[in-house]
Length: 213
Image (cartoon, rainbow, N blue to C red; front, side):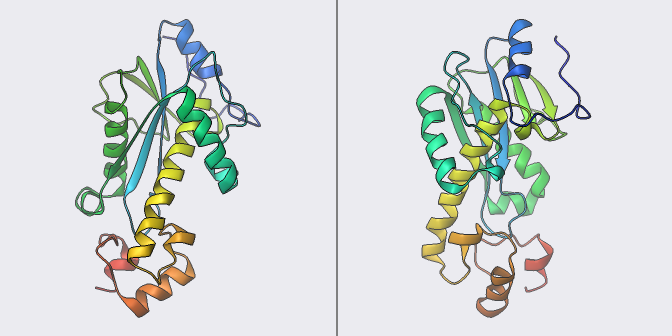
């Protein structure tokens, strides 16, 4: 198995496909990048995405979703969906409260990988932990969304999907600003919590929410 660069290596200016190519050279035919969105918010699910890029049709401009403007994320999302194998999955608020946010995030990642049309040969996970039940080899890459093109693509897919979920929930529960803050604990969101109360979509295991109950 090729040696994957460690977290102490200098990060590139943009994520690239070098780790995936090393794994391909070692015999891994399909390499999936996996990332999640929504670990920090007070409300809504945590969302994970798995992406297997086509090495012969790599979309240009892919970067860590946090470094991209919303319009750029949507534009790149269309390219990714058109040319790659993708899967998106979630862990619910109830699962977050029952399992804790870390284990719920890992569960969402497992579900995203399981949702791919074909089980990949190797999975690259953003972060420092690998979910247990992936069904294939996996490597955790710290700051993987800044290193791996596949993980960066997954970060875009997860971010855009979750943002759209929170926009839909904002229409159902107006006043919390979820269409702007995606459920993160902004000042406006915390003030709305104090004034409007806790909704069914708030994470009761999170301290800010729990203290209001």
